Image (tube, rainbow, N blue to C red; front, side):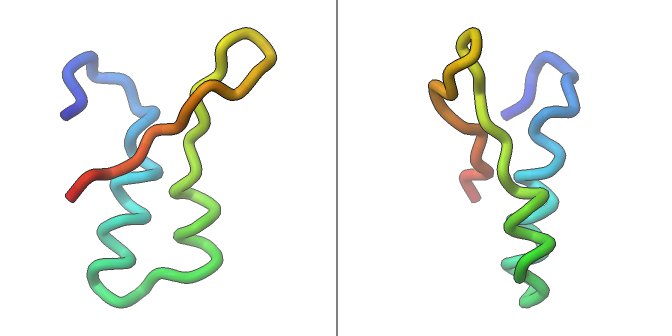
Length: 50
């Protein structure tokens, strides 16, 4: 669910779709990574949950 219109979820969603369609791999893994930062520290990540 992306309610705020931000594009930060685009990579993880696209990567998950590629994986589901059998086209995952190195590129999907790279674009699927979307860390959430709290200052200079990584505090979480955005993941597609479908």
